[in-house]
Image (cartoon, rainbow, N blue to C red):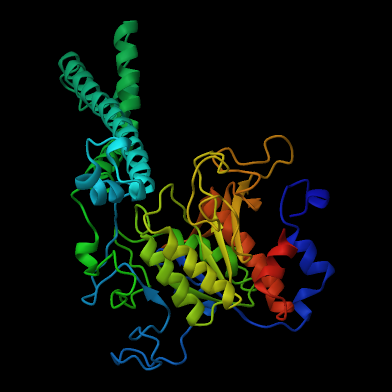
Length: 453
């Protein structure tokens, strides 16, 4: 939509297609790598636009194109092992930092630390603060949820004594007539608890998962994958399973991102992506939890080496154990004329004073590459609330904003739905970048960034 034509703060895509007659002009096909979760590459709105490695013969267990990855017909999954197992969930990065440095820095102060370790020590202390705050929040949420569950059970027992012949379903509770205001209040409260009962159980399970996995210092997903996560040269891990299944562990994020970029514009179903002059390359690096810097770096290099023109990374985190690996991969992408686009994150933080990774700056916050865009989210209202309320921001750190509120896109199981956040702003910018590069293939990645800015 266009702000002047439609009163909606959109990106004027329909206007661009109409006024520049884009559908009738010749253009190149652009490869966009989606570094994300595994996704449903057979979705009817996407299946014609998935990248295929023409140098690889499917399922012959041979690295036909000598790129280091066996049978990578549609991309690569850095979250699996050779036996086909997947690491669906992972720690937050600050938990990994604590696990790595606890034996070195625990109960020490800055005066007792070797000066050359001061940066690592500060990162460890900041990680501890984040860990303690998050764990307290989760435990507090868990207490509230469990209290609600106990109160529901108590009310059920109390009312079952008053109405022994009723099963106390929502329907039966709604039909009870009583002149006792206190009993009526308890009935209404129990009805509300019953309506929220499933959600309450799901939330309790989610909070427990935080404690058992995301915040668990003893949990390490790399035991499934089997690589040395501290060795960037150890690349012989992962598998070619980029297609998600429909199990409860099935990843659902990547399909939403991919649809925004390139869903079929001509089939009259679902949605229209930004452009169909694309092939989307699935590269799985994102678990539930934080990505490993090693997977981000190798994922970027995989995309570059296999012909990607644009890389979309709709994820971010507040800590980075091996930032250097990721920066070097982004520089490698710059050297090979590949544009890297990332989401700014959804913590409503000012990134000029709070850290957020991946980024394109060195230790003194100086920008060191020209092929990197970090994208914040806008709402559809033009005015003082145009920035989406969850979006991170920052005059220096966030390059540009794009729509990120209630974005309708492809979802798992061949469905569609609304989603909000910077994860959906980034692929809008990636789609625009692909649109530009498809019609103007001689423009460099840095020039495309300048044009978008």
